[in-house]
Length: 357
Image 1 (tube, helix red, strand yellow):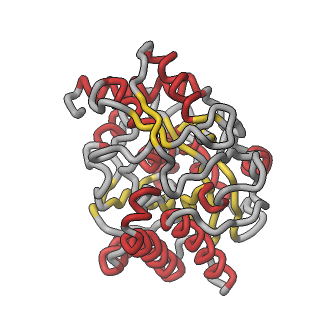
Image 2: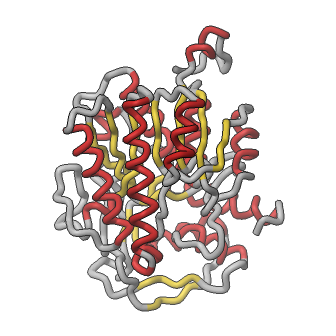
């Protein structure tokens, strides 16, 4: 489905595969829409805009020159979703739509179970009826819980989840496995992300949380630019070299590209099994305090932060063993942590210029 010389013939456009991207105005979703469009796919976005803005569509259009179709829908609304499937003939789905903050999930577990489970069940139920062949599911390294050893590969045991958010990812993976095992005529690729950060190099799209950021990097950049007074680092007494949590921070554009490869893999019947699981990470563990130092280096700004107590639900240290994604999927992380943090800072500066925040 690649573009040739940046243009497609009418025949190619006619043949363009149509992909439904749920949560497509969100952070990872919007970057994936860009990569899909640049690979020649026809994209339809659904999003309920609970944690994103329709303005993202303008940013996508400025990058690709193509405005994706958009429907403001909630994936838990089966009637609305069925009407959408009747309107379009989807070849594949990438399912991002979910509530996604670990801390909030501990406070509001039922919201997380309803949103994250029902949305997937609705999609799976509609797929065979409307001949949709494949679904890429956005999962998370949270399914591994606190790992016994790092780096962690796909054969590592699934541990009891440390939060309701993590548990919804585990249960959804099982729902997909069970549905396919029952004989459903679909394929799925489950992508277990580590920690996506950064923004598109154009600074047209990036991570734009509504309200107080739940993720680390937007909080760092908002503190750096003066929107937040101070960053809280949750714990410096972990069994890590500097006492702060260790994560595998992966560039969001690198991550987005893995979804395009996964869609191609299913639609072109390259998958070895009806359900495949891949870890998406860099293979490098970086601590929260090390990430702050990288930000200070690329921005030239000292960051105002304080150490506070540990946060419930946080895992001490986890980073990926990405060999399977590298060798089987044919994907690897390319961007450096410095370039990735610089892209996040550039995006924050762009938001300030535009008066968004």
